[in-house]
Image (cartoon, rainbow, N blue to C red; front, side, top):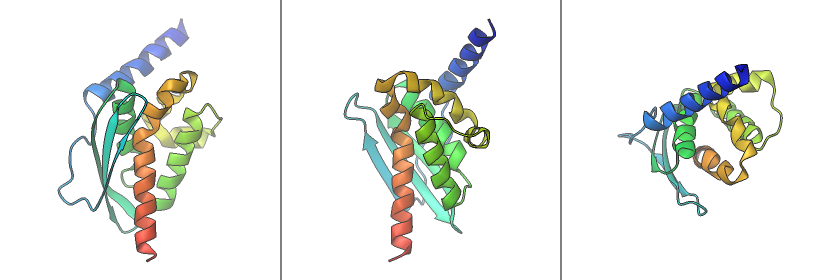
Length: 151
């Protein structure tokens, strides 16, 4: 009975983020943006970021796709906003391990916030790409920023 209530809560959280995504839209002054497409299902996610003082100062996304991809992108923006570059990379790595069904620490789980509810996607391998699409885009943008910084 309790497990059913928990699953319902998680489902509602995912549906709420997909229906009313956080940080959805375009940034007026983004200097880093990347659109990724899931070749399997056609979902697309465009992530835009602004970096200031070695932090993710602004982040937004647009895209089309399934509930999982849109909810995950929404949750990703909330998790990464305001993070320094090192912590943002760690959060992305934690999410990647979580979504693959690998164990993560309680601290990592708490740091992921609402995004941790997507752990159940690991049971559905065809949906993993949907859940990680935005996170891969953000990780790539962080790498681009770091490469440009060291040029």
